[in-house]
Image (cartoon, rainbow over all chains, first blue to last red; front, side, top):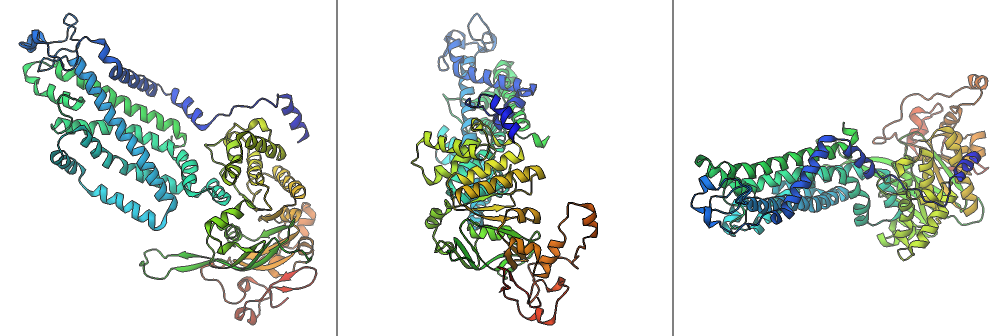
Length: 305
Length: 328
């Protein structure tokens, strides 16, 4: 021991050494993964487009360009002269502004869905798994019952009965998105709760909610974050599907799904830009989310490789 | 025994687990696994009680039952006169700061997402939420310094330390509340021998300095001999012998203890070769269905008919040695 102290006292012992957390390790691993980094950049660009795209065009998403409206098919294509970069939609509105608006709504739905699932699902699953016994049984059977309900049917009913609104869409997504997450979080909790650091916390007398928040949840987060990033695209697809059916967001709001639906309806008139631009954003964003989630999984769980 | 009153006295402690057979109907009564089956002992202030026994004999379960981390079936655990088993959650929480625990796997006992400063401070913040941040920091630095971890490491994470260092951090966490009892559940079995010695000497130094009592669980008999004042030998959830450490190693009373002691390797090849190891027949019986009478009789070389009928009580054999055996 004596010589060890000598060597270490040579380092200035008053200076506090910064530790490298597991998160920092994971970040370093993530940035070595090229596909994931490219996806991250694409996602940042798409988000910037959603946030600030509206400033790039003089047209708003509600204004109709009366000059071109009469002949959208021949005059309404993408053009810098008319400042309709993505062309016009069938009603003569600027498609660029419409895509910006659709991107905002689609991203918002994806992120809200993922957030609900992370917050509700993680806490629900961690509580069920940690407390265990009868409570665990009851809580997980509730999840099973909710899962057994054909959610698409219920959501369509909700939208029909309570009127088509974006709020009802959020309610519907909120109801289903956390179920899988709760199961995943519970499974992970079962393996964490027998670790000795949790026992140490129990022996010290830390209260159960604090153990869940301080010891269980941070150790779940790796898995949860990965699952959440993979959930965002599936939420977006879910919403697009509903909107494609005409039940999702309603005019004057729009989303990727609604725009694609609109564009697909005009396909036979040769106005392919109406389908192409929203579809392009939809596809690259979904690809980017999937690769980003994959990269996160490799970074956060190196043992799996 | 001296006239002092014991810090901890355990009487007839039983811990049974329900084991449900696979595919059993929910209404059938589960089998009882008798992990700890009627253990009595006293622990004096400042004393170290070693607990030894083969794996599965209930050492760790006993420790966890005392800390109320597993529910006990019956018995009393008197801590300075209060029965811990009958206290409510709040009352138990008050006592938790007086007793702390050190675990077997040094790395697994530290939360990988917290810095060691946060880990060591946690008990303090839990029991004294009003202590100021600067004071918490000062106490953490002081206790880390005491266990031989440089205090400028407080922002590091557990995975950046070696096993021995992690165990020191675990000890620091146990010490920060200045407890009266530390239960060490095989604290050195996961460390290599030179580090074992350091950790044990650290524990002994701290014990003398703070007047702590230790319950030291291990399966390494030479380690237990080095640190313990008294040693308790468990077999299948029962105490077979409690005696002063020296006495136990010099003249083991119970046949099981004799077999254990004879199996300790001697650090001299010649002497070791001449040493006669007393081998026991058969395997450890299942705690689901322990033998009647004396639990050791199925493997005991001295077993007699009486052993199958009644359970031998722990009886005093002088020299502070208590043995549970009909024959000896």
